[in-house]
Length: 276
Picture 1: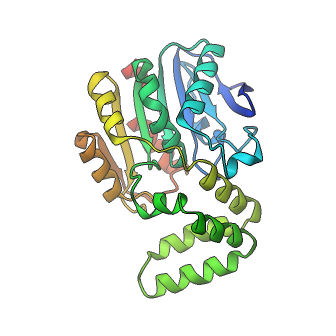
Picture 2 (picture 1 turned 60 degrees about the vertical axis):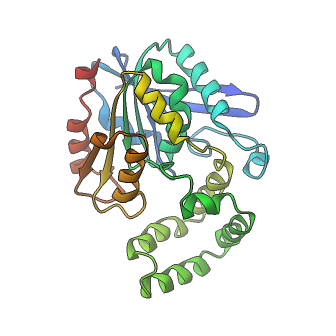
């Protein structure tokens, strides 16, 4: 299908996105950190219009470098940009799909758009627990300083993580995950910048719960049984907090789901046309 790249702006914020197709079934997609808007091309059908966002610092989406440390991106910024995008694309109602870090953006903005959302599919989403160690470290200046240092000295981080794995404090798959980022300086630097700049995107469990109770949105959280990054335990605990335990679907994979055989399984789990 034809691919179009468009963008909307708000002050220094530029949110770019790709459009595939012109069908009546509109699907809004948010990719993960270090991933690409093209991840969602596998959803293409003649009946669909795929709008796949470039997260900030990915693709063509940009903002002022000062926002990495202050004047952070908020859910209100995301909501205003999405409203502009939906207006530009003449979208009334739509389906929403988000993966990993894209889930943090989606959960933060979802309450503002729920009345227009037909279905919400979260795949191994970030943002499930604002009080866990990962989220807590985002808000501490000293841990951000450490990661700023490790961007230029990734071997230090890898040596520490391998040592922690050796004494079974962290899972070896976390080491593999970190190695994926630290082996590429640009990718690791982007990960650090997004980790810092997005730390004020803090979804509210209470607000998400109230929103799902108010609106008739088909909701499904898809998690890999062997995911060590966004774990099945964190997914279960989140769904208990928002009273949506039946929304959980486990698939026999890890965190990286963008592989042909896994994408086929995901397609079967997201019957958009049936939910129109």
